[in-house]
Length: 399
Image (cartoon, rainbow, N blue to C red; front, side, top):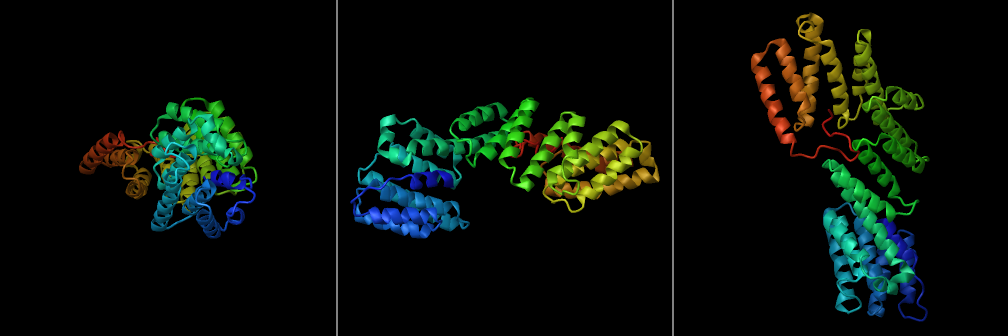
């Protein structure tokens, strides 16, 4: 969004001899320097000097929009957006544009997006983009068509993100393909676009395509070591999830051994669990130790997925016979508070209610067994109506 406003302001051509030109130039220079309050004041003065120059109104409105983007106070942000809308309204009041003019619709679309109403933003920017070419002609000097296309694409990416969290991957893929057509190769939104394409492709069973998008994203982020590590972990996790174990192992072998990046840690735990569940025996104990160590110091908001790995090992180690041994019972009782802690964090997720039901069944506690069986059934039913995926296309409650 900031890039869209910068394109408009940076590309403007001088209108020689107009009384407002000095203020327009000063405002653009201040904007480019990040001094948005100064820019807003210059554009406001330009408006008062020449009220029939669309640039003063448009630039002032867009500067207020830019200020709102970076505003952390919700009250202040709302004030800036109200003022931006009022200033843009002057374009209509003074009969400089009409309500369907692409410049006015563009400003309105940006405002909707910052307000969080991405549906209206997408529709409004789409309306602007459909305007006849002659409607854009007065604004060729500021490349308005390019700006609207870019803003529409950015909005489409956020629409796709919403579709992904709802599991509507086919529709998300369509929106991302539409968005891709309006983004330059070096656009900052490309990183998010490729990341979401990967999530969609994986969930549609297009594994090679998903990995390709992640590697493209990695190339975009090559100067950001943290992002590269995160993407490396994601690639490894995808391979492991799809039983491409050796490919996942190869990816992890190239990552820094001491990295605590959450996706790399999760991938290493997943690999250890995959190996242990295949080989059994002492490997189960090794995997359990790896996951226990990983959970210590892991971000609390992410530890749920490690607990699911831990659950898999516990269930592989302790069946009805093992539950009657001191070692088996001790492991079950160790697991109980771990599961309860994660249930407190994610009460909507059904899986750990079932894990507790199983523990109480093995321990012979019929009352608690029935309680957690009922809770599991209820949570599973409720979960059918909730968003099931995160922004990366991972199941929000695991599997």
